[in-house]
Image 1: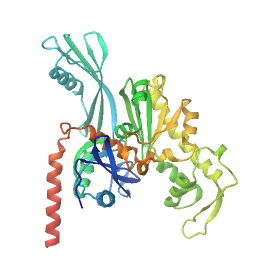
Image 2: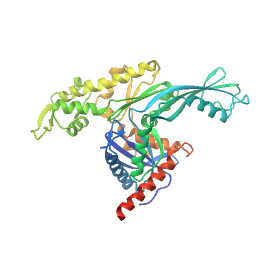
Image 3: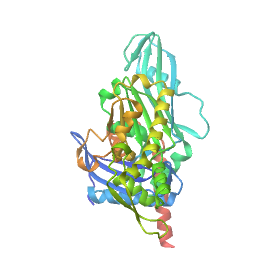
Image 4: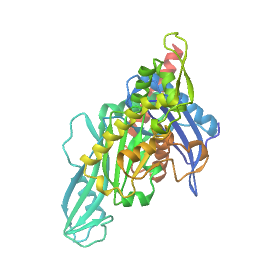
Length: 408
């Protein structure tokens, strides 16, 4: 296969789906040239619990993307998901050395802000500056060159479980991939679907995934709050499987094809066939009956997100309203139900800022993978994680072990 220049690969490892998006850097940004998907069998709530199945699914998705893009994929930007991801705000203060803020002062104040005590099983994934304060002047985005004697920084810190990140990287390495960078899934989704105006006015992004629901709140152009709730589309599927006495795979199919989040506006005269469980014959029921199972669970999930926003004190600053994305957001009438719960304008978030095969990824299901590509487009190589070298060594080790197994 021909190897394309300046290729960026986003790898979204989710509970239900593993998605790979290949994009080529162009003068217009990122051109989508390939996409691959595979059913995810080795994860629970976004965390790896079966390494072999996860590696197999990654390989399948990568091969599909390679075939479409006519390229060889060897390095990726991976998305980290799961309820282990947490976010909190921090504050740092330093003295300005030469009465003029320089790049070194900015680095020192950010280091001071990130110097927080963490449990031994947690690591810092991202330190995101919110604003700088020079003496008593706040709201500063770029303090370099300003006169002052005291520099403060307010930042948002995102952490994750050490073992979860290591297992994610090991799965990629065993699939023959080098992990260039790891980005928290909620941040990736926000990168893909939000506009600069929404971030400035204030917006809440809700990513309805298979195993978790992610929340990111922006105010004044910066992230103010992040949270991952351990509820997702799998709960809706389990409710359907139990209520309809049908296998989970059939319940998922019914949810995607015929599901509705508002029973009152769903026709009761539309009949659907439901496969029986354990060899039992199929039976029929109306779409409204299906919606009557889906609506309470989705409303419960959205209510939990609303309480999280209120707990963080961000409910009064969402002038741009709510943006829904993720696979769970494609269920019919979910945005209308969200407007009823939040009492704010709600829109469906699909990937933006793209060229190339845009129609192929024009779905909330691909928001995280597209966001990983856009994140890679912004990187110049200086912000890569230290695991990169270790990742390369792991890839080489796995390949050598494979050769030895074949030889003997």
